[in-house]
Length: 372
Length: 125
Image (tube, rainbow over all chains, first blue to last red; front, side):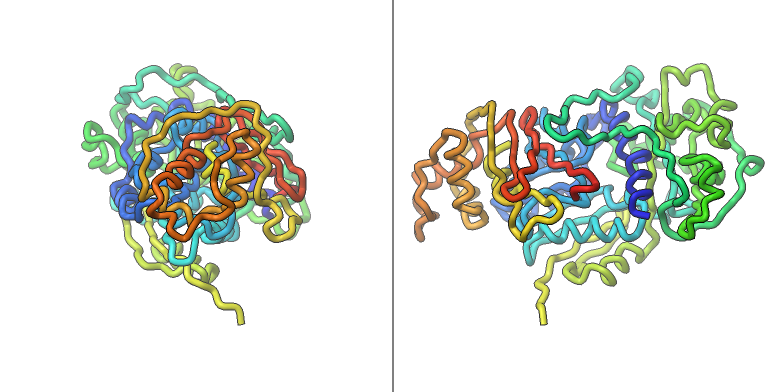
């Protein structure tokens, strides 16, 4: 099960971020104010780890503390480095730090990319491991219940468009990944060819099977709504600049359709598998209709899949210039993150819990564990 | 990669004895020294957090002997000369190209353009 989860994350998160990294222009976005405040309130000389730092949006805050960022995505880490930040490349399930060496840890918009509850738990435990007793962790994840949109399911693919028409960054982004760090010693294939996942199944939590095909419906709206959706989908990650603030006020309706995950990841072969762990996922894909068709990660293309048919049916002529990538998210229900921590991570004690711009947010303190 | 960062890094290859992944041995092919503004209070706060022997060893391996004592003196917070030397070795010396080697497993992690790549394969992690 873990292998499949890892594969899904590679396909629908890591490879997507590698593709969108060149277009991820942080000039368009500001940091979440409460995250900035959390960093600024740390004592002088504190050591702070930003897990999943991206291109270093929080690493410039406060010269009184030492910040160390890390991310799985090479291009974004390089971008952070080019700003002068201290960064490493690593996986958040295996952080390359000594235990209990940080005063504070940030996990902003990271945990929601893990595709099983077990991996979410492991990721949070790993951040707790590197935190000293008395230190604080801040966690932000996407909320399922939001003020201005509604996720009908918890496990979703959300499109990300690299170049909405209003973005001042201008040109559509080039395709492909600019991989600039080479493995000098052991090769770790980041963009792995799509593996046929024989037998075993999808990764996640509860799932129901559903049929696809005839249930799809799509609304083709004006280009203005396209832009708003693109901005909105990214607004869940960070606060937009003042100039784009008005677009966050729009109430956006989405049409969504259900697609079986096994249609995306594997062929009919898996359905015939006798693997008792085979579980079908019903995933909701919120898509913006006019942003070109969905562009599946390149190793996801399966001719004849229902999603691929939807893609080809709706492909506008501008697809070659604009692409939309799908990112996997598990959006958290109210209380879900707290329950995960309370039940499975006794070394963390939740001190604050709140809702911030469509995120579930939590601050927890590392407590001393006594062995009896 | 600054030496303060190095002092926090550890290998977590599967099967290591506890603490066996620290400190990583540095084999540097390109090192840069760049001035950083000095803040005595900031550095003083960092000192107790450091693995001191690992810091001295790392500085030595880069050909930047730190002229630091085997252990910080009890009154180090008021010793500006000491704090400036700590500041220099922690924050002004950077490894741009090289390799970090796990002391127990021998696993090598490349440093490229100042960025350590600490990714492990699924079999190793």
